[in-house]
Length: 428
Image (cartoon, rainbow, N blue to C red; front, side, top):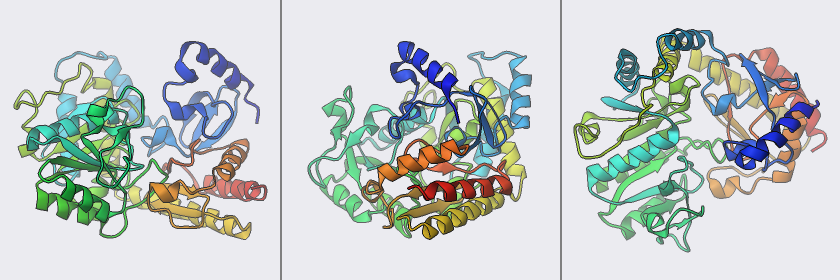
């Protein structure tokens, strides 16, 4: 495939946008080459500026669970836009989507809408600190919760040390309040809790990791976190920005029957528009202004266009009794096909799946955390990525990102993808 127009557009973008992109992973630095510029999308397909058609496996990093330009969402946004695009005042739409979300997700009484997953996680941490009157948090290596300062932390020199900033601009003072544990490793969490008694406000985790590839929780991990939090009066925060309303109507909490204290949303809850949210039981949420002392605000929070899109999406998912079953079946079909092809061609690999999330790791050992994810063969992944792109398949341009399956994919699309993997794998 030719990408002359995309290359021209990228060169123009680099002159006025840092790195030519507004989010770093789009820049193809992990795989080489120039990013693809999209002109339009419909269903399971992207159409780029050079006229190429691509089967899409990132789906705007998750929200397009029912396909691009999903008609009920488009109609809701169009109808709402004609009434006004922003008011800075309450609307009935906000209450409608809040009530629906609360009815779908276990363990929450109230929800507040913000503008991104980053904002949701940042606000959830502030709320947890305000509720517990404690300062420290525990996060997990490889889990991504947005780019606010508290989360851009890497490991210190030992298991009980404070983390250190992994981005300039994040202060050491901020980093000292973030403790880093290992995903799927309860003992690392116990070590941190024991070393920091009565100072930890919250443990925040992607209940299914999606930012080191798809890594499901091992049996007992989430349950163990719940038990530890209960024993030490720590709030458990599930970052379900990726998984919320994607793996089940009630997200991972419903799927795996483990309840968090605070849950963060994004992606699907906005139907493709910029939306985030955080929710909890009333006892916790009532600490937010204007009821309580924890301040959080946003001029565009609850924007009518975003609320209309999100409401249309949640209604569609809530009313379809088989959508999550269909998504899981399509994911399993794709995983089985890729597995058989890579085995035939003697490629070292591991495939992780859960629900409608899947990732291919080019290492034969189980991938259960950031350390094992980092062992993957990135050179092979680069060849795999560009090989699939040349065949008309668009996957995430990073070995550390999950693929997202959309219900708009047909089994013909999946067969086409498996055939493309077979062709590409012969040259890996």
